[in-house]
Length: 183
Ligand SMILES: [Zn+2]
Image (cartoon, rainbow, N blue to C red; front, side):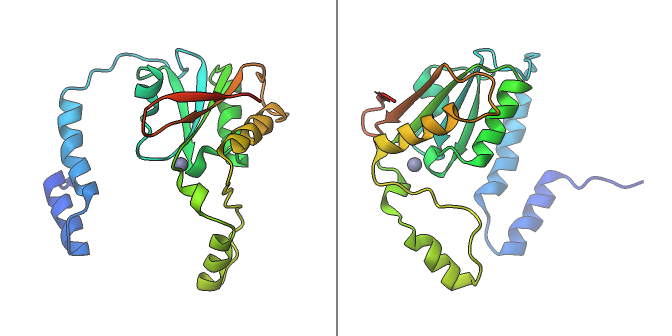
């Protein structure tokens, strides 16, 4: 019979292995508090509002708060830039075909890190590690144009069932306001 090490011991071991505590160590402790007050609401995996949101991973953008959404309401698909990549389409396809979403909101934001990067990033990365990334950086210089590009990629995807309710926005990190971008 094996025993499961208790979390504080595992946490201490993990911390000492790296020499300094990680923020992730605190996740374990905070999760215990979270779980203590957690109640299974019996929610379905299918989003209540039948909507998927594609957004940048930016730390300043709280998608649920900004859109007035509650837990269980939507799918949130995030990546650097909130760009529509093949993997974004993969998630949207599962979202629509297996989990019943019908609408898609795309959100870019002011002050995005991708605005200051160029394809030099990939070239310098290749020089450093000796391997050319298989992915495109998807950096951009024009926020609005990139939102339009993202909307176009979604609208032209053959895999999606619902392409009539797709809207794109720029979130202003200084005011918290969304600005809709016309396709
Ligand atoms: Zn961003």
